[in-house]
Image 1 (tube, rainbow, N blue to C red):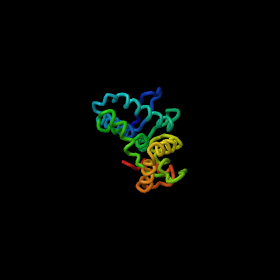
Image 2 (image 1 turned 60 degrees about the vertical axis):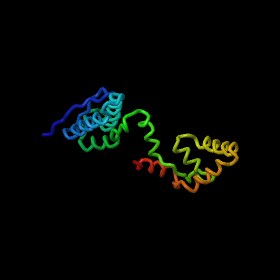
Image 3 (image 1 turned 180 degrees about the vertical axis):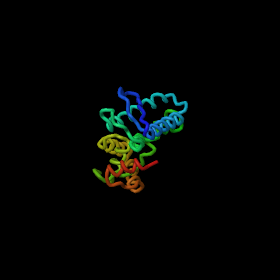
Image 4 (image 1 turned 90 degrees about the horizontal axis):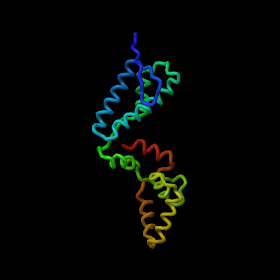
Length: 174
């Protein structure tokens, strides 16, 4: 006979029915998250957000809330949510770390000349036409120095063919 455990998660009025293995996985996940967050001032908010995210995924698995969610399903959901990595512990570094993981690349898809502007636009989240405008204005006002920088970037940056390949590369970066 297998033990079933009702679990209530933040932001959800219904409880979820987990098997014993799933409950152990969920409990150890939150214990690791608590220890990794340590004295982080946003610790409770982050834990609540994790609970809500996990609860949304559990609700998709069991819309009525009556189905038992097995341990392997819990592990899959926790894998989707990911681990808690608070960074170095201070606020600014934590917010800058995702930008460090996004490499500088030229993107051939949709490029006009070398793909540098497209790559910078996707990396920074700015529309490509704004990046091109900045490069053109920079070239005019610096007497062509920005054109030399652009050419240097064309030769120095690696080429990625499509935006989807770039996003895949970002997911694989540590």
